[in-house]
Image 1 (cartoon, rainbow, N blue to C red):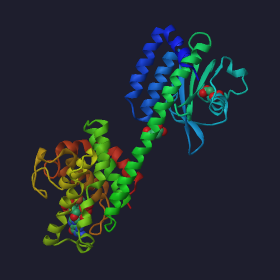
Image 2: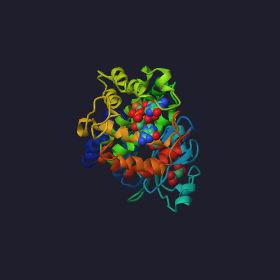
Image 3: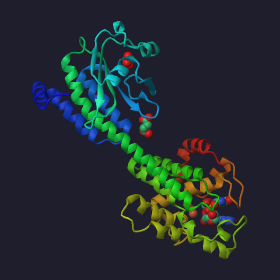
Image 4: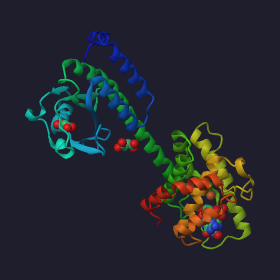
Length: 375
Ligand code: C2E
Ligand code: SIN
Ligand code: SIN
Ligand code: FE
């Protein structure tokens, strides 16, 4: 680790690199998603180290391997053993390393070169150690543009590595939190509907359909992510519906259907008045997912843009999934038939803009349907 003094000396010597460091710090701080974070680190490191390629290897606790995805010149995610190659050595020994003639270094593993047809001439590899001392991976630069790597590159690499390591650690925590949040929402929503034939997969599907439609409509990432979490809570108000109605294996009487309609209001009552954005959105979705574009829906008979957009999107996702699924009161329809029903509903039941986006997203939607199969 460098002392503050050494760090100051190095930095004052290299003005143009300081700019790159500031730019890096600013950019990496604005990213949350792990892929984005890795890309910013790799791009900045390539400039700062003045080399041809940079790969970031991230340690996966579950497999005990190091994986990389955003390696320059590499298309797919690869995994390497934590003890093999230069990268493995640097990871296990927590020491940086320069190797300017890799083919005569016994630690070098030429397998990647063989696979990619690339010729590695020089390597710099730095362990990614966080402020709190955990090693999250290795930053590797390949082929210095002029000559080989020098000690100064090692110093720069290490300054970069600390910040990179913390950004990666945060991104991993963020991904884990997001996954936990998604799973908790799904599990609690399914708990709320456990008497119904509703399944975990129904909620996963309609949540992802909603997300894909919103993306297609051009909503920003964070809004789409919120909708993905809000959508599965749409029928939470079915908690308040009596078994006799909810589980009836036949058509509902008018009176029973009036009771059934109240699941929108019950859901709203459960979710309303929260200061959490996702729950606010979920309360709108619960209340308005059976409203229809032409004003003939329930519970309030809202029309057009009076219906919150999140509910207009979920309406299409929910009905498409209801149509392609088995219900106690109906058999599933073929996909083509279900799509036809959605198209026919454009401008009547559904917002035409949403139907259009649904059709554009259909190839992706069908992939989800197949992956989280209709049971
Ligand atoms: P769900 O089963 O999740 O259905 C959600 C929505 O999908 C329905 O809202 C409806 O708009 C659409 N949908 C479902 N099946 C069909 C279909 O066969 N054809 C067409 N064109 N659309 C369909 P809706 O009608 O407001 O119903 C809300 C909820 O009320 C349903 O949720 C279900 O739990 C219950 N429900 C509706 N009709 C019946 C019924 O005849 N028998 C029973 N037992 N429950 C019913
Ligand atoms: C990965 O990059 O392999 C997984 C992280 C993500 O879910 O974006
Ligand atoms: C290694 O770590 O030895 C392989 C270097 C590479 O990525 O080509
Ligand atoms: Fe509903």
